[in-house]
Each structure stands twice: as C-alpha cells, then as structure tokens.
Length: 180
Image (cartoon, rainbow, N blue to C red; front, side, top):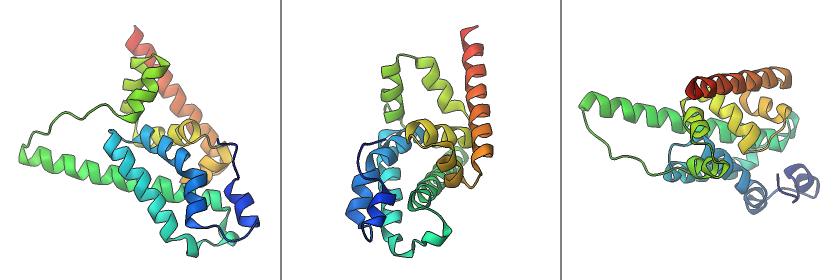
C-alpha cells in the first residue's frame, strides 16, 4: 500500500474530496482491476467505473455503516462483479450468434505476473472461479488485510481468511497438476 494518507486520516481532517479519494486509492484500484480483468482495456474501464461510482456516491457515505475504506472496496468489488456479468452476457450472445471475436491482447495481469516469471501461475489464476480471483486480487493486488477483504465482499475477517486460504490451495493444486 502507498505510504500516503489513508482515507481514514483524510476523513478526520475534514470531508474527503473526489480528488483525494482518487489520489489515495487509484493505484490500488488499478492493480485490483488488472488482476480481475481479461484485458488492459477492460481493466482501465473497470478502474474508471469503480472510481466514478465512488466519487458519485461520496455524499451518501455513512460512517455509522463502516469505514470509508470498506465502503470504497465494496463499491470496487461490486463494479468488478457487474463488469464480469456484462462480459459473460456478451460472450453468451456471441456464442449464440456464432460470431467470432478477435483474440484479446495481453492484459495487465499478464504483464505483472510475467514479471514474476511464471506463465503457469498466470494461466491458472485466470482459470480460477470468479470469487477466488476477486478474493486473491483484493488481498494481493489491492494489498488489503483480511478484515478489509471480508468487508469488501460481505464476509467477516475469519471467513475471508478461510476463503483466501482455500483459493490459494486451489491455485496450488492446479499448478501441481500442470507441472506433473
């Protein structure tokens, strides 16, 4: 996470502006979007849509319902779920109509994971179920702790931790299968 002011610190200094919200969290939102989106264009769209949703609803934030950071990551994960649903509906229509689509270019996820030097990891991460990818992207892409991940997806921190461990176990099992 960045060594800058957090949303909680900014909120204590007064109302958070749209510019502060974007400045503080745009990098984390972009990393998250890159991990859950199939292409750079989709990642850009997701990050922009999520931050725009947050900015538009900034005036509706209620501190009694939770921290601002939790509120933001709930918006981001909902935007990601909505984008995935739109992509799936489009794929379904394309399949029903028999339309061929051009091959997608390399995604941000591909570039980042390629730097780690493991193409198998990259491919298997993409094959994980949507929930597993979301949890892993929030935990490792957005660098959230277990409590924050849980709050973003509507789970308590213990349940989120178990779900992340299971997602990692499924990823490890897939990687072992590939190596054998």
